[in-house]
Image (cartoon, rainbow, N blue to C red; front, side, top):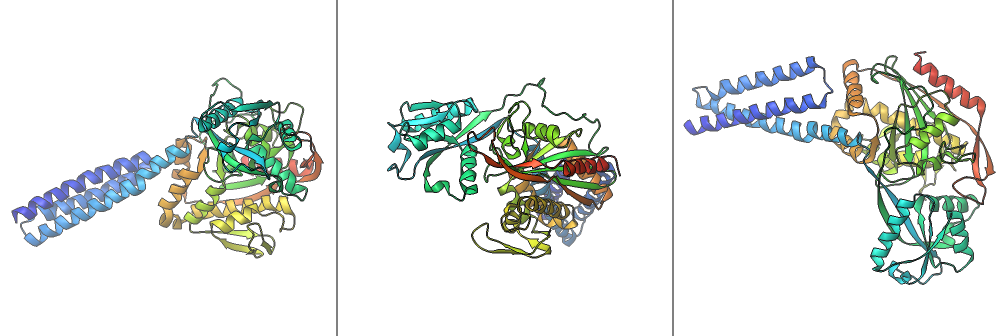
Amino acid sequence: MKNIKITGIIGFLLQLIFSITAVVCIIKTDILRSVYIFFVVLILLLLLIISAVLVISRSRPLVAVGMVFSLLMSVVLAVLSFKYVNPFNRGIDKVTTPGSTYIVKYHVVVKLDDSAEKIEDIANDKIGVENNHDFDAIKKAMDGLAARLSHTINIVAYDSYDDMWNAFMNSDETRAILMDTNFFGMRRDFYADNGDNIDNYVRILDDIDVEINIETDPGQDSGQTGATPNGPLTERPFVLYISGIDVSGSINQKSRSDVNIVMAVNPNTHKILLVTIPRDAYVQFPGVTGDAYDKLTHAGIYGNNDCSVSIATLEQNVYKGIHIDHWIRVNFTSLEKIVDALGGIEAYSKYSYTSYFTGEPVYFSEGMNYMDGWKALVFCRERKSIPGEEPQRGRNQLEVIKGIFNKATSPSIILSYNDVLDQITQNVVTDMSRDDITNLIKRQIDERASWSFETASVEVEYVYDYCYSYGSHKLCVGLIDEESRQDAVNKINAVLNGN
């Protein structure tokens, strides 16, 4: 009897410790009102009283029941605290901390018929580099390449990627070139738009990744033009910019922004407006391009990888007079894994069609479609098989966001909570504060509101013209349709004004 009672007391003390731990962890999340926390504490206190009564009982069977009950409660509370609540706290901190560095990737490129099989095979040959765009990154890339080759590399410097590419393709000045993967991607797109394939001419010998420190100036103007609203996001309408970068892997890569969506949110009327604009919209980048124009997607490769150039570009050229409060960045890896963690979503397709984007047929029917992560990714990226092509792809992306939001705010999210949180922390980053996010969650828990969605699209007319980031060849670009642009602005203002 004595040994059982001692074990029961130990179990009770463990239950007490884990009860306190659970309450502290829940309070730290800051997503529950005080009244809910009071009820949690009350329930845990009642359970402790039950355990105590059983453990101090004179009946051996009751003491044994109390011992088992306390140990089981300790396990449950430990799992709750360390598997669910604590990861939430760490996850929110990670998502809301964009980081002090970003990653730039470089390809080491040789001609298709070059005999080199590994990077050491070009150790004694001339290598072309561009020395004007992101000088710190290219210098680190050259240092990294030299370290791998164990000696100083023979460099030929060019003023632009266009000059470097033309010299590489049309002369023997260099055997290889070191090229930012974003600018290489532009070349790949150019060949594809002209019915060709860059792989018919060159191949990637190796890759060099470099990590760059972000240096911020607190007094520096971000370039944003709209009036800055005041007050917490739970008490006023706000606007988010969603940037979808065109890479898989690390969310901290500097990359082109293929998806450019503005989300106007009114927490008082529970209305959300999603507005998309084609990646090829022909615009000026404030503080970057001067009087020259470029594709909107290319804005993502300028600045400190904090979406500031893209946001300033949208505010100045598209959503005039509207302030974009915050940004969220995702990538292809993010979308696929988050949708899978949610257990799939439902998204609306305007058309019935078969996509061959991945090389194998994927069928979408007119109306609502159930999609796992891979199918949702195909739905967002396919454009050639859809009537309407690029503009319709943008609308499809809005439907996927709606599907994710609806699933994430439904009660079923509890079943996949941990998986979803894990994927979000790895594949999403934002400049929203922890308080902004937790207060929005807290309000949703309180109100359990159903949100209404509207969508809008800024239309473009496709032409061919020169781009700041590309050089001597004309690319397919989109001239913004003024009527659809103004309509989008009016709809955003309507949501923000509570109409």
